[in-house]
Length: 217
Image 1 (cartoon, one colour):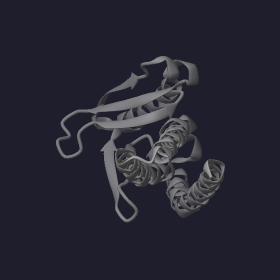
Image 2 (tube, rainbow, N blue to C red):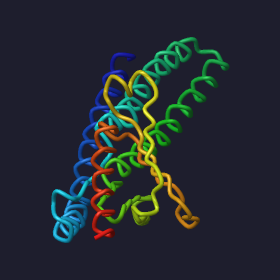
Image 3 (cartoon, helix red, strand yellow):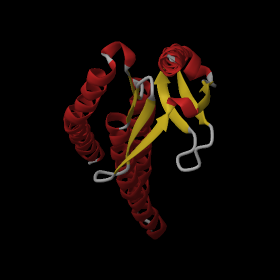
């Protein structure tokens, strides 16, 4: 009986991972045309060499999507093993604890898949386009709401890099923080899980120098 239930649970996980793959494909296709259109417009206006397109690194998908699913799967298997051992006990307390375990599994599963879906939307649908004169950040908040933040590069007083921890050093990712000057409406802009942040900061600084030279001339 236990092996049958375990096999059923494995099939359920297979369906769940298939659903996740389909969901990733849908979200990717949903936003590809829009991001490409915005990028092409920026390239047409400023030249392709003067446009930087920023999206979260793939390590974000591993740490914030795949790892929680794996953790939930292992925890569920452990809880199921505990449930069947209690059920075979046959006592009233064992049955009560079994119901509690199933409630935890279902509730945590619903919450975990909600978080995974939200993070997938962040991965595929959040990005920034930087030109010599402006930083534009597109932030997807849920399925139907998108926030757009604009910041003139002339208002940026400094660009900081936050890359703390062993994983950041190994996989070369971190955060880029644009500290603005006198911008009370939007404040500073922080982009997380960015690949090669130091190299990217150098590229952005060169774009900002290009904008300064244009204004001086």
